[in-house]
Length: 397
Image (cartoon, rainbow, N blue to C red):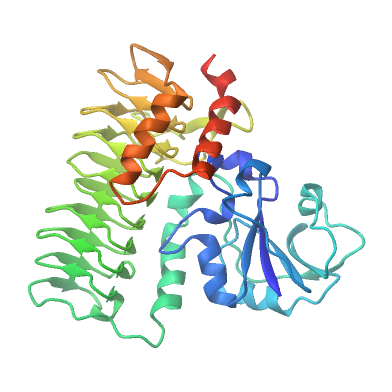
């Protein structure tokens, strides 16, 4: 048996974050969606995604496969319903297919997720459904994901001791330190939700954290950082300054003062000192962001929305990002004034104009950045970035 997470037609709606990963590899909480499904089901988990991503994120097979929308958070009631599915049946809510159970047949087509196929028996699902289908959903549903992951990871386990030099506001049982985690002389407020500090991670002196909050394995929270939950920073991140309701997928740096609010950063990003994001328009109106699927600005319906940045994105010191700015993969943004609200992948520049960030130079930088975390830029990584560079040439034109 296996779980196969399908992008189900939303991959293009989650760009630029999914230029370099399938939907199921997004991390809205402590775990990626795929990691959470694996821990909840103890079954092999694979991805049905774009062809150019399949070498890095392969499919899985088995006598019985349960196909699931990749953006669905594996909440307990949903997981139970998926595991109870028998071959030839599908789980449906409000006319949308959530999951399909099959034996050895071809995976469902993209169209099957929008119009329930007649050859399957529908089973209505009346429980809670939380799905990531747009980039801003990551910070919108971050709190729900952290709470779900926290319960999953800590059940029956005991936290590493928390130093008496810290101040806990709320329930101390909602602070969990994994092996090797260090937290000193900080203020931890759990009244809004739990705080999870990953293996080998460090929270430096004077940090102030309001849950729900997750700090990934071997990540660092800098001295005096001010973190408002729900926020999640993945493995190996370095974060300082002021952050509010934001998600950083992993291996990225926001190590200095500056404000990041209602934002999502991919992996291997770096925000220069005093980089600031606007997350609220002066009119207090709804924020629009660039949609790769619609090739136009799309209304998020949100009053608060800051920066969406793809993998390997960079900003220079004192960079100012306007409300609802979208930065593509491997772009380097710098200079005075506000840069455009949509910066295509592999761009170089800012408010004074953009030129192409050459692929060979971008790969060279990516290699050096990843080596600092003792990770190679391997052939599969290079192939993905080369594909994104070619696929986004029209955006730069």
